[in-house]
Image (tube, rainbow over the protein chains, first blue to last red):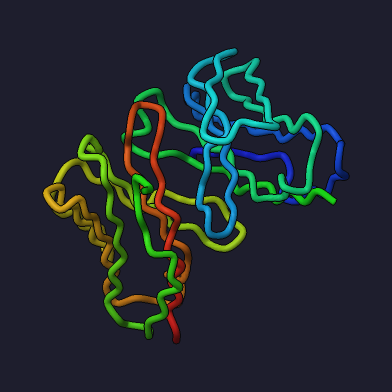
Length: 114
Length: 110
């Protein structure tokens, strides 16, 4: 089975902390994505990467950065966590033409910033 | 106006009923259409994908695309309590990006 693994299911962090969310996929997918999911707002794309060391801003990149040093790993960084970043964060991956055939998602990280 | 519109529900139906879930879209360039199912506290999982117009059937699930009306549907026959989940439609804009509906919460009552 294709697996996308997110390092934490639940995280609680304090305002101002630097937060790292890790995602690893084992299917040699070129594309990787970070979304946040909030009630009533659906899935919103934060960043995506189509190759190692490549990154593109999504719809809501402010307050976030990403890192992709290896093909299988894509990290999301909250530079200085704020309460409005409390959300469910979902990582996904696909082959380079895979948007046409769907993504594989991880189970999500529910982040609470207090 | 959002590119993809989907009623958030909740939609509550009795077990055994036929369920119809729908999305409308505005961009005629969309070619690939997907339905994802998301159980509570889990990530979305791909349920079905279709290319262009027409129907696609997989067991109790049928995906339908009407490009002339910019309308897609997912039908679930003989619905089961285990089908209770949020269903998200998604459409391909490029090799990288999917455009998502907000998701419809479905509740199947035993």
